Image 1: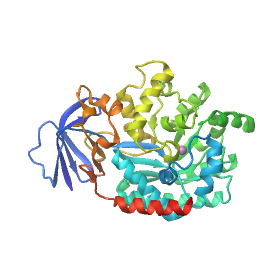
Image 2 (image 1 turned 90 degrees about the horizontal axis):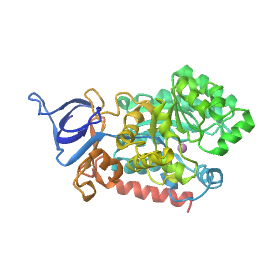
Image 3 (image 1 turned 90 degrees about the vertical axis):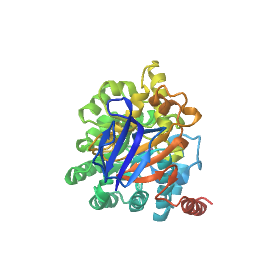
Image 4 (image 1 turned 135 degrees about the horizontal axis):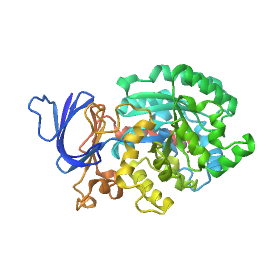
Length: 426
Ligand code: NI
Protein backbone atom coordinates (compact mmCIF):
# COMPACT_ATOMS: atom_id res chain seq x y z
CA UNK A 1 0.00 0.00 0.00
CA UNK A 2 1.23 3.50 -0.83
CA UNK A 3 0.46 6.41 1.48
CA UNK A 4 0.86 10.13 1.01
CA UNK A 5 1.05 12.36 4.09
CA UNK A 6 0.19 15.74 2.64
CA UNK A 7 1.21 19.16 3.89
CA UNK A 8 2.69 18.09 7.23
CA UNK A 9 5.23 19.81 9.50
CA UNK A 10 8.07 17.27 9.37
CA UNK A 11 11.05 16.82 11.68
CA UNK A 12 13.95 16.31 9.26
CA UNK A 13 17.30 14.58 9.97
CA UNK A 14 19.02 18.00 9.81
CA UNK A 15 17.07 19.00 12.94
CA UNK A 16 14.90 21.42 10.97
CA UNK A 17 11.11 21.39 10.85
CA UNK A 18 9.57 22.18 7.46
CA UNK A 19 6.23 21.66 5.71
CA UNK A 20 6.57 18.63 3.45
CA UNK A 21 4.75 15.86 1.63
CA UNK A 22 5.88 12.41 2.74
CA UNK A 23 5.42 9.62 0.23
CA UNK A 24 5.41 6.04 1.58
CA UNK A 25 5.83 3.17 -0.85
CA UNK A 26 5.03 -0.20 0.73
CA UNK A 27 7.08 -0.27 3.97
CA UNK A 28 9.53 2.53 3.17
CA UNK A 29 9.70 6.29 2.92
CA UNK A 30 10.07 6.77 -0.85
CA UNK A 31 10.56 10.51 -0.74
CA UNK A 32 9.97 13.74 1.18
CA UNK A 33 8.94 16.55 -1.15
CA UNK A 34 8.17 20.25 -1.08
CA UNK A 35 5.64 19.84 -3.87
CA UNK A 36 3.67 16.72 -4.74
CA UNK A 37 5.53 14.54 -7.22
CA UNK A 38 3.66 14.25 -10.53
CA UNK A 39 4.03 10.52 -11.08
CA UNK A 40 2.98 9.10 -7.72
CA UNK A 41 0.30 6.45 -7.36
CA UNK A 42 -1.28 6.47 -3.96
CA UNK A 43 -3.86 4.34 -2.12
CA UNK A 44 -4.33 6.51 0.96
CA UNK A 45 -3.93 10.22 1.51
CA UNK A 46 -3.48 11.55 5.05
CA UNK A 47 -4.07 15.27 5.47
CA UNK A 48 -1.14 16.42 7.61
CA UNK A 49 -2.41 19.97 8.08
CA UNK A 50 -1.94 21.00 11.72
CA UNK A 51 0.07 17.87 12.46
CA UNK A 52 3.73 17.27 13.34
CA UNK A 53 5.44 14.25 11.77
CA UNK A 54 8.35 12.69 13.64
CA UNK A 55 10.09 9.35 13.32
CA UNK A 56 8.15 6.93 15.55
CA UNK A 57 9.49 7.00 19.11
CA UNK A 58 11.62 4.05 20.20
CA UNK A 59 11.32 2.73 23.73
CA UNK A 60 14.80 1.20 23.99
CA UNK A 61 14.36 -0.59 27.30
CA UNK A 62 11.16 -1.98 28.70
CA UNK A 63 9.50 -5.12 30.06
CA UNK A 64 6.21 -4.79 28.19
CA UNK A 65 4.17 -7.47 29.95
CA UNK A 66 4.93 -5.87 33.33
CA UNK A 67 1.94 -3.64 32.60
CA UNK A 68 0.09 -6.42 34.49
CA UNK A 69 1.89 -5.28 37.66
CA UNK A 70 1.30 -1.56 37.24
CA UNK A 71 0.48 0.00 40.63
CA UNK A 72 0.73 -3.37 42.41
CA UNK A 73 3.86 -2.42 44.39
CA UNK A 74 5.16 1.13 44.51
CA UNK A 75 7.38 3.31 46.65
CA UNK A 76 9.86 0.54 47.49
CA UNK A 77 13.61 -0.02 47.04
CA UNK A 78 14.71 -2.08 44.01
CA UNK A 79 15.72 -5.34 45.74
CA UNK A 80 12.79 -5.80 48.18
CA UNK A 81 10.48 -4.62 45.37
CA UNK A 82 11.82 -7.39 43.10
CA UNK A 83 12.17 -10.20 45.64
CA UNK A 84 9.09 -9.66 47.81
CA UNK A 85 6.54 -8.34 45.32
CA UNK A 86 7.43 -8.66 41.63
CA UNK A 87 9.20 -12.02 41.27
CA UNK A 88 6.62 -14.08 43.29
CA UNK A 89 3.78 -12.89 41.02
CA UNK A 90 5.88 -13.28 37.86
CA UNK A 91 6.46 -16.92 38.80
CA UNK A 92 2.71 -17.52 38.42
CA UNK A 93 2.33 -15.85 35.02
CA UNK A 94 1.23 -17.99 32.06
CA UNK A 95 1.91 -17.63 28.34
CA UNK A 96 -1.54 -16.02 27.95
CA UNK A 97 -0.81 -13.54 30.73
CA UNK A 98 2.34 -12.38 28.96
CA UNK A 99 0.43 -11.99 25.69
CA UNK A 100 -2.30 -9.82 27.20
CA UNK A 101 0.22 -7.82 29.22
CA UNK A 102 2.18 -7.13 26.04
CA UNK A 103 -1.03 -6.18 24.19
CA UNK A 104 -1.90 -3.73 26.98
CA UNK A 105 1.60 -2.28 26.55
CA UNK A 106 1.09 -2.13 22.79
CA UNK A 107 -2.08 -0.04 23.20
CA UNK A 108 -0.31 2.40 25.48
CA UNK A 109 2.77 2.62 23.27
CA UNK A 110 0.86 3.19 20.04
CA UNK A 111 -1.37 5.77 21.73
CA UNK A 112 1.65 7.82 22.78
CA UNK A 113 3.49 7.59 19.46
CA UNK A 114 5.94 4.75 20.12
CA UNK A 115 6.53 2.53 17.10
CA UNK A 116 9.28 0.21 18.35
CA UNK A 117 10.49 -1.19 21.65
CA UNK A 118 13.37 -3.25 23.02
CA UNK A 119 11.94 -5.77 25.44
CA UNK A 120 13.49 -7.95 28.11
CA UNK A 121 11.14 -10.46 29.69
CA UNK A 122 10.11 -14.09 29.84
CA UNK A 123 9.70 -16.95 30.06
CA UNK A 124 7.05 -16.99 27.30
CA UNK A 125 8.68 -14.78 24.69
CA UNK A 126 6.61 -16.43 21.92
CA UNK A 127 3.59 -14.71 23.49
CA UNK A 128 5.32 -11.34 23.33
CA UNK A 129 6.34 -12.03 19.72
CA UNK A 130 2.69 -12.81 18.94
CA UNK A 131 1.63 -9.50 20.52
CA UNK A 132 4.18 -7.68 18.35
CA UNK A 133 2.96 -9.51 15.24
CA UNK A 134 -0.71 -8.85 16.06
CA UNK A 135 -0.31 -5.20 17.06
CA UNK A 136 1.92 -4.29 14.11
CA UNK A 137 4.65 -2.73 16.26
CA UNK A 138 8.38 -3.24 15.71
CA UNK A 139 10.42 -4.85 18.50
CA UNK A 140 13.70 -6.26 19.63
CA UNK A 141 12.84 -9.18 21.90
CA UNK A 142 15.01 -10.86 24.53
CA UNK A 143 14.34 -13.50 27.11
CA UNK A 144 15.73 -11.96 30.32
CA UNK A 145 17.52 -14.72 32.24
CA UNK A 146 17.93 -14.70 35.99
CA UNK A 147 20.63 -17.37 36.12
CA UNK A 148 20.60 -17.78 39.90
CA UNK A 149 17.17 -19.40 39.42
CA UNK A 150 16.99 -23.06 38.27
CA UNK A 151 17.27 -24.02 34.59
CA UNK A 152 19.47 -21.16 33.40
CA UNK A 153 21.24 -23.15 30.67
CA UNK A 154 17.93 -24.51 29.30
CA UNK A 155 16.69 -20.93 29.18
CA UNK A 156 19.77 -19.98 27.18
CA UNK A 157 19.02 -22.84 24.75
CA UNK A 158 15.49 -21.49 24.46
CA UNK A 159 16.93 -18.04 23.70
CA UNK A 160 18.82 -19.57 20.79
CA UNK A 161 15.56 -21.12 19.57
CA UNK A 162 13.87 -17.71 19.84
CA UNK A 163 16.72 -16.13 17.88
CA UNK A 164 16.44 -18.75 15.14
CA UNK A 165 12.65 -18.43 15.03
CA UNK A 166 12.07 -14.68 15.22
CA UNK A 167 15.22 -12.76 14.34
CA UNK A 168 14.38 -10.75 11.20
CA UNK A 169 10.90 -12.31 11.04
CA UNK A 170 7.80 -10.44 9.84
CA UNK A 171 9.66 -8.51 7.16
CA UNK A 172 12.30 -7.51 9.72
CA UNK A 173 9.78 -6.17 12.27
CA UNK A 174 11.07 -8.62 14.87
CA UNK A 175 14.67 -8.90 16.01
CA UNK A 176 16.04 -10.93 18.90
CA UNK A 177 18.86 -10.43 21.39
CA UNK A 178 20.23 -12.58 24.21
CA UNK A 179 19.70 -11.21 27.69
CA UNK A 180 21.39 -11.80 31.00
CA UNK A 181 19.10 -9.88 33.39
CA UNK A 182 22.09 -8.38 35.26
CA UNK A 183 25.47 -9.24 36.75
CA UNK A 184 23.87 -9.62 40.19
CA UNK A 185 21.46 -12.31 38.94
CA UNK A 186 23.93 -14.07 36.62
CA UNK A 187 27.19 -15.65 37.85
CA UNK A 188 30.32 -15.05 35.71
CA UNK A 189 30.46 -18.61 34.34
CA UNK A 190 26.93 -18.18 32.99
CA UNK A 191 27.83 -14.81 31.45
CA UNK A 192 30.82 -16.47 29.74
CA UNK A 193 28.62 -19.21 28.32
CA UNK A 194 26.12 -16.64 27.08
CA UNK A 195 28.92 -14.59 25.49
CA UNK A 196 30.13 -17.70 23.62
CA UNK A 197 26.61 -18.53 22.49
CA UNK A 198 25.98 -14.95 21.33
CA UNK A 199 29.15 -14.90 19.27
CA UNK A 200 28.35 -18.31 17.76
CA UNK A 201 24.89 -17.27 16.52
CA UNK A 202 25.67 -13.57 15.92
CA UNK A 203 23.22 -12.20 18.48
CA UNK A 204 23.60 -8.96 20.41
CA UNK A 205 23.07 -8.55 24.16
CA UNK A 206 20.43 -6.63 26.15
CA UNK A 207 21.19 -6.27 29.87
CA UNK A 208 20.90 -4.02 32.93
CA UNK A 209 24.16 -2.30 34.03
CA UNK A 210 25.18 -0.10 36.96
CA UNK A 211 21.65 0.80 37.98
CA UNK A 212 22.18 1.32 41.71
CA UNK A 213 25.02 2.16 44.10
CA UNK A 214 24.47 -1.20 45.83
CA UNK A 215 25.06 -3.03 42.53
CA UNK A 216 28.44 -1.29 42.21
CA UNK A 217 29.55 -1.87 45.82
CA UNK A 218 28.39 -5.53 45.83
CA UNK A 219 30.22 -6.16 42.55
CA UNK A 220 33.42 -4.67 44.02
CA UNK A 221 32.98 -6.82 47.13
CA UNK A 222 32.17 -10.07 45.25
CA UNK A 223 34.45 -9.79 42.22
CA UNK A 224 37.00 -7.07 43.07
CA UNK A 225 35.92 -5.09 40.03
CA UNK A 226 33.34 -2.46 39.14
CA UNK A 227 30.35 -3.72 37.05
CA UNK A 228 31.62 -2.76 33.58
CA UNK A 229 35.12 -4.22 34.19
CA UNK A 230 33.64 -7.39 35.69
CA UNK A 231 31.18 -8.00 32.84
CA UNK A 232 33.83 -7.07 30.25
CA UNK A 233 36.01 -9.90 31.58
CA UNK A 234 33.27 -12.43 30.71
CA UNK A 235 33.24 -11.45 27.01
CA UNK A 236 29.59 -10.32 27.10
CA UNK A 237 30.45 -6.95 25.51
CA UNK A 238 32.16 -8.48 22.47
CA UNK A 239 29.04 -8.91 20.34
CA UNK A 240 27.25 -5.55 20.58
CA UNK A 241 25.45 -4.51 23.75
CA UNK A 242 22.40 -2.52 24.79
CA UNK A 243 22.94 -1.65 28.47
CA UNK A 244 20.00 -0.21 30.37
CA UNK A 245 20.59 2.45 33.05
CA UNK A 246 24.33 3.22 33.35
CA UNK A 247 23.55 5.46 36.32
CA UNK A 248 26.70 5.01 38.41
CA UNK A 249 29.71 5.46 36.14
CA UNK A 250 33.30 6.56 36.64
CA UNK A 251 36.08 7.28 34.10
CA UNK A 252 37.05 3.61 33.85
CA UNK A 253 33.43 2.56 33.16
CA UNK A 254 33.06 5.17 30.42
CA UNK A 255 36.29 3.99 28.77
CA UNK A 256 34.89 0.44 28.64
CA UNK A 257 31.58 1.72 27.25
CA UNK A 258 33.43 3.58 24.48
CA UNK A 259 35.81 0.71 23.75
CA UNK A 260 32.94 -1.72 23.07
CA UNK A 261 30.50 0.81 21.58
CA UNK A 262 28.01 -0.10 24.29
CA UNK A 263 24.69 1.70 23.77
CA UNK A 264 23.38 3.12 27.04
CA UNK A 265 19.63 3.36 27.54
CA UNK A 266 18.70 6.08 29.98
CA UNK A 267 15.49 5.41 31.95
CA UNK A 268 14.89 8.69 33.78
CA UNK A 269 11.39 7.91 35.08
CA UNK A 270 12.39 4.56 36.55
CA UNK A 271 15.66 5.90 37.99
CA UNK A 272 13.76 8.69 39.73
CA UNK A 273 11.01 6.44 41.07
CA UNK A 274 13.40 3.79 42.43
CA UNK A 275 15.76 6.56 43.64
CA UNK A 276 18.59 4.89 41.73
CA UNK A 277 20.33 8.17 40.92
CA UNK A 278 20.86 10.37 37.87
CA UNK A 279 22.80 9.04 34.89
CA UNK A 280 25.62 11.30 33.57
CA UNK A 281 23.88 11.71 30.22
CA UNK A 282 25.54 14.98 29.19
CA UNK A 283 29.01 13.55 29.70
CA UNK A 284 28.17 10.34 27.83
CA UNK A 285 26.76 12.31 24.89
CA UNK A 286 29.80 14.62 24.86
CA UNK A 287 32.07 11.59 24.75
CA UNK A 288 30.23 10.24 21.70
CA UNK A 289 28.36 7.42 23.45
CA UNK A 290 24.98 6.46 21.93
CA UNK A 291 22.42 7.28 24.62
CA UNK A 292 18.83 6.23 23.97
CA UNK A 293 15.71 6.42 26.15
CA UNK A 294 13.48 3.82 27.73
CA UNK A 295 10.58 3.67 30.12
CA UNK A 296 11.67 0.47 31.87
CA UNK A 297 8.70 -1.67 32.99
CA UNK A 298 5.33 -0.10 33.73
CA UNK A 299 5.62 -1.22 37.33
CA UNK A 300 8.64 1.02 37.94
CA UNK A 301 7.61 4.10 35.98
CA UNK A 302 4.48 3.69 35.92
CA UNK A 303 3.70 4.31 32.26
CA UNK A 304 5.16 3.59 28.82
CA UNK A 305 4.94 7.18 27.59
CA UNK A 306 8.11 8.16 25.73
CA UNK A 307 7.02 11.81 25.56
CA UNK A 308 7.38 11.85 29.32
CA UNK A 309 10.82 10.19 29.15
CA UNK A 310 12.02 12.81 26.65
CA UNK A 311 10.86 15.57 28.97
CA UNK A 312 12.41 13.92 32.04
CA UNK A 313 15.68 13.32 30.17
CA UNK A 314 15.86 16.99 29.18
CA UNK A 315 14.99 18.23 32.69
CA UNK A 316 17.23 15.77 34.56
CA UNK A 317 20.12 16.42 32.19
CA UNK A 318 19.92 20.12 33.05
CA UNK A 319 19.78 19.53 36.80
CA UNK A 320 22.53 16.91 36.72
CA UNK A 321 24.93 19.23 34.90
CA UNK A 322 23.53 22.43 36.50
CA UNK A 323 23.27 23.78 32.97
CA UNK A 324 19.95 24.81 31.37
CA UNK A 325 21.54 24.37 27.92
CA UNK A 326 22.19 20.65 28.54
CA UNK A 327 20.00 18.07 26.74
CA UNK A 328 18.05 20.56 24.60
CA UNK A 329 14.76 19.47 23.00
CA UNK A 330 16.50 18.44 19.75
CA UNK A 331 18.86 16.14 21.66
CA UNK A 332 16.00 14.59 23.64
CA UNK A 333 14.10 13.82 20.42
CA UNK A 334 17.19 12.30 18.79
CA UNK A 335 17.72 10.12 21.86
CA UNK A 336 14.14 8.85 21.51
CA UNK A 337 14.40 8.24 17.74
CA UNK A 338 17.70 7.75 15.91
CA UNK A 339 19.71 6.82 19.01
CA UNK A 340 16.92 4.43 20.02
CA UNK A 341 17.20 2.67 16.66
CA UNK A 342 20.97 2.29 17.07
CA UNK A 343 20.58 1.07 20.66
CA UNK A 344 17.96 -1.52 19.71
CA UNK A 345 19.92 -2.64 16.64
CA UNK A 346 17.19 -1.54 14.21
CA UNK A 347 18.41 -0.83 10.68
CA UNK A 348 17.03 2.04 8.55
CA UNK A 349 14.79 3.19 11.37
CA UNK A 350 14.67 6.42 13.41
CA UNK A 351 14.75 9.16 10.76
CA UNK A 352 12.34 10.72 8.30
CA UNK A 353 14.48 10.16 5.24
CA UNK A 354 14.04 8.51 1.85
CA UNK A 355 14.99 4.84 2.07
CA UNK A 356 14.19 4.59 5.78
CA UNK A 357 11.41 2.32 6.99
CA UNK A 358 8.05 4.05 7.25
CA UNK A 359 7.75 4.23 11.05
CA UNK A 360 6.11 7.62 11.53
CA UNK A 361 4.05 9.31 14.23
CA UNK A 362 1.86 12.34 13.64
CA UNK A 363 1.05 14.53 16.65
CA UNK A 364 -1.98 16.79 16.54
CA UNK A 365 -0.85 20.41 17.02
CA UNK A 366 -4.35 21.84 17.25
CA UNK A 367 -4.72 21.72 21.04
CA UNK A 368 -4.17 24.62 23.46
CA UNK A 369 -0.87 23.14 24.69
CA UNK A 370 0.54 23.49 21.14
CA UNK A 371 -0.16 27.23 20.80
CA UNK A 372 1.54 29.44 19.81
CA UNK A 373 3.84 27.33 17.65
CA UNK A 374 7.23 29.02 17.76
CA UNK A 375 9.12 25.75 17.95
CA UNK A 376 7.50 22.34 17.36
CA UNK A 377 10.54 20.54 18.85
CA UNK A 378 10.15 22.41 22.14
CA UNK A 379 6.41 21.84 22.06
CA UNK A 380 6.85 18.10 21.59
CA UNK A 381 9.36 17.72 24.43
CA UNK A 382 8.09 20.25 26.97
CA UNK A 383 4.39 20.62 26.29
CA UNK A 384 2.89 17.67 24.38
CA UNK A 385 1.09 14.78 25.99
CA UNK A 386 0.15 11.29 24.85
CA UNK A 387 -3.40 12.39 24.03
CA UNK A 388 -1.99 14.51 21.18
CA UNK A 389 -0.95 11.37 19.29
CA UNK A 390 -2.99 11.33 16.10
CA UNK A 391 -1.67 8.77 13.59
CA UNK A 392 0.91 6.00 13.92
CA UNK A 393 2.47 4.13 11.01
CA UNK A 394 4.85 1.17 11.36
CA UNK A 395 6.51 -0.52 8.39
CA UNK A 396 4.11 1.32 6.10
CA UNK A 397 0.99 0.08 7.93
CA UNK A 398 -1.37 2.42 9.75
CA UNK A 399 -1.74 1.24 13.38
CA UNK A 400 -3.62 4.31 14.57
CA UNK A 401 -5.65 6.53 12.29
CA UNK A 402 -6.96 9.85 13.55
CA UNK A 403 -6.76 8.57 17.18
CA UNK A 404 -8.44 5.22 16.33
CA UNK A 405 -6.54 1.97 16.89
CA UNK A 406 -6.65 -0.13 13.72
CA UNK A 407 -5.03 -3.42 14.80
CA UNK A 408 -6.15 -3.98 18.40
CA UNK A 409 -9.53 -4.64 19.99
CA UNK A 410 -9.00 -2.44 23.01
CA UNK A 411 -11.97 -3.63 25.09
CA UNK A 412 -11.03 -7.28 24.64
CA UNK A 413 -7.51 -6.55 25.89
CA UNK A 414 -8.82 -4.74 28.99
CA UNK A 415 -11.20 -7.63 29.72
CA UNK A 416 -8.44 -10.26 29.44
CA UNK A 417 -6.03 -8.18 31.52
CA UNK A 418 -8.59 -7.86 34.34
CA UNK A 419 -9.16 -11.61 34.24
CA UNK A 420 -5.43 -12.37 34.37
CA UNK A 421 -4.76 -9.96 37.22
CA UNK A 422 -7.69 -11.33 39.23
CA UNK A 423 -6.15 -14.80 39.01
CA UNK A 424 -2.56 -13.67 39.66
CA UNK A 425 -3.14 -11.28 42.54
CA UNK A 426 -6.86 -11.50 43.33
NI1 NI B 1 14.65 -2.90 33.33
